[in-house]
Image (cartoon, rainbow, N blue to C red; front, side, top):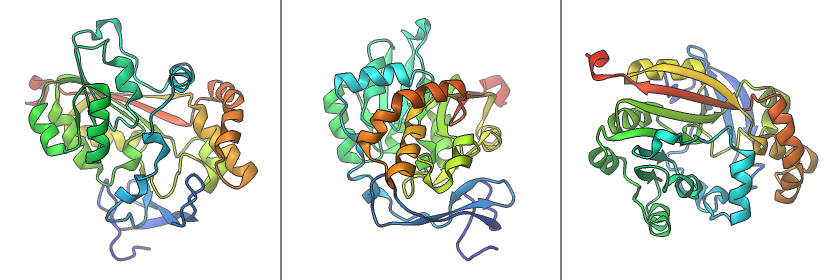
Length: 292
């Protein structure tokens, strides 16, 4: 099966198999439904026909809204395994949070690192975050690459790659801004987790129509080779939100926020016991000597 127009965003192959058909938006309850397919060559799962313009999907996206002090504290405790932890030696490091969302991670690290930058593709949202946090938040990859060329020590991308419609372009940006020997830290939903297999179309990590692709370890290995990275390390992290939201969807037919909040604590304990829902990827930009 290779319908016209389909091309794997990783390897370019046109042969696919169906993975999930007619997936509704359980999270924001929009009317849009999408199909997910799997490349027969490299096994990447992605949307069959990603929309040409996805900006409108994020106009009311809750994850871009400011968080209260209590919410930020809960995230520090419950999501500690997922978000990059700045080490003691980070005081002189330059950090870029690519896809900085509501800015909570930037706020947490801005006084613990040498220089901190953010990136968000929406101009208005990026400008508002920059004013709020009093630090640079880019919305243009062209400007980002030019101003931070080979100057960043750590790039973080927490739950970002699943939203990308061009994985190679994103990795080009990572390799452009990172210095040789710089660290790339990525967190993505794990499409091969027990949670995904259990909940199927109701798995919150799927989040149609906003999540476009689900790269796994083997795909990150290919991206690392092609874009000048090595020392790839793979691990899993406990992230209760995906499990709690999936259960809320099964129980009520949609992801109800009040039900999700009530399920967070038991789901956190379950996620700690079997942390497979979130994939953590670390890799290093090859040194100048290795690059030659």
